[in-house]
Image 1: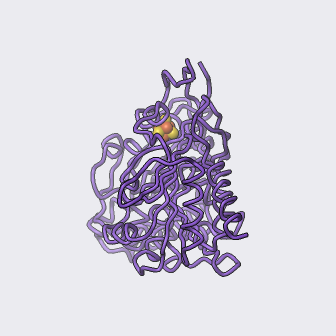
Image 2 (image 1 turned 135 degrees about the vertical axis):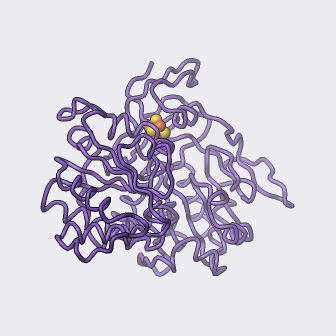
Length: 427
Ligand code: SF4
């Protein structure tokens, strides 16, 4: 039994799993939620590299697939290299090197999830904390526009509402839990207080709370976005009187009307709450290393996502260098997709545009993007078959271990082979 194994599924990056390995295979996973266990056990693996010929994907060798991938990227005028959130930081670094080599645009899944949060944080700054601090100290936990009961199943038990910490030994009974959302989710059902928002009114509600907090409740109307002012006053009082409060926010806030301005406003609310008590805020990041690719890109280029390397120096302009915009404008003429599934979560017209360009897919698992890929390269699962580094949603850097040997090369090794081929073809 291997102890203290990390789960490479969601941004919680749980590091307390026990995994039984026998005959070179993972036999049992203990301590993980169903999402994590299913990934570690492995399912629907891509078995061999494939290249599309005459409309059909045919088996190929790694050498052939990497050479074809390099050729596609070199022939393209505006290649996009997309994904990077479910692989290691070491593979992310190789991706940046490849983007520089081919003059491509490097974009991440954050562009369609917490991208607005990153922009809001860059604009405003962040009163942050680690999940350990939340576990040990928080007595008020607010989930805003997120549903951890279903998206991050062990978040409550390990880090937030139900966790027992050094200064929170009573766990759930010693904490107050609030949910702000547009519908009554499972997380909302478990909360002490639920504020139901009209969709797209986050900005108004946060602004009203800031007015109340600033002593200007008299100018706030009797109802704000369908919520009675009395309820907002009561909520702000609870926040002011907390010993240590935290707002966890999700895509409900970042993808409703207002987008990064909602986040900017929420960060301002939290900053102002610190005049009364200790309050922090954190984005509920989805993929296990989506925080890591942001760190690696910011370190390498100064920008957290959507970086264009075609000018010889990094250039970042969301709306221009984001993958959906490049595809919608029919500017992108090739795509490398790694550890992501844009065919499942991009808008339909964008998926149609993606299907018109040559696509290279690097992934351990088959997914709808495989159906439109021209080159498919299977890889090892990071944290199970390959080691590496990943960043948890709170920015903690953790080491992924290799548990079993694999016939598949790591993402990092595959990217290096493509880089070698690019250099060879250009020589
Ligand atoms: S909560 Fe997330 S990181 Fe933890 S076991 Fe479940 S999927 Fe894995």
